[in-house]
Structure formats: C-alpha cells, structure tokens
Length: 177
Image (cartoon, rainbow, N blue to C red):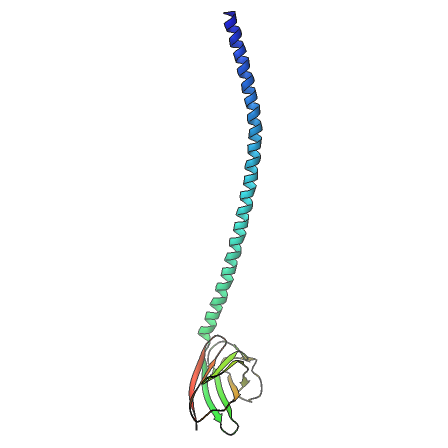
C-alpha cells in the first residue's frame, strides 16, 4: 500500500510538473499570439485608414466634378443668343454678324465659334456693336456684339451660326445678291 501511495504521490508530482511546464509553454505561446494579434490589428487599422482616405478623396473628386457639371448645365440653360442682323458688303467683301446676348449669363468675348456655310472660325473675338471697334471682353446680358469677317461669298442663300462658350447659339440665313 505504501508503494501505491508512493506511486500516487509520484504521479501527482509528475502531473504538477507537466501542468507547470504546460502553463509555462502556454504563456510563452500566449505572448507570441498577443504580439501576432497586435501586428494584425495594426495592419488592419492601417489598411482601413488607407481605404477611408481613398474613398474620401474619391467622394471629394466626385463632388467637385458634379458641381462643375451642374454649373455648366445651369449656365447653358441661362444662355441665349439672337442673331439680330447679318449683312454682307459686296464691295469690301466683309461679312457683319450682329448678335445680342438675350440670356442671363455673362459671356467671355473671345469664346465664340462662328460658322458661315463651310467656313469656320474658333474662339472669335467680338467687338461692341455700338462703336464696332472696342473689343468685348465680357458680353453682359442685353449687350449687342459684332463679328466681322473678310470672306468672299458668291450670290445666293447662305447660313451663319454663332455658338457661345456653353454650346448655345443661334443661326440665321441670309442672301447675297
């Protein structure tokens, strides 16, 4: 019986030693696991922050683009031109196109495109119709402007078209005799 007790005591000492060693090994693994978890947490936090910044920049850029598009659409709706008179001087071979800004937007005087049949001029500078000399830097609502072109036109019906910077324009047919 003494030997049984001795064996039981030895087994319990061995179990205690094993459990102590296991605890020691677990705590070592636990610290390594905590370090790994901390590194993963920092990595996930970094990636999440990068994603938030990227999506924030995307949202800001999208908002800016939509605002520009909205401003362009509003200006397009508020813009209106009217060709009031087209005159061709046969002797000087000069075409005069009088245009009035009947919209409610200011237009840049050098941002007009003018078409006469197959002839085309891009970013044409306008002059004030009153004195026919002063360059119109800004064409305010209700201002009249003039475009002058040295061009040879044969007799017959011709088509003129003036387009503003916002893509809005007017066209007028005229006759040359």
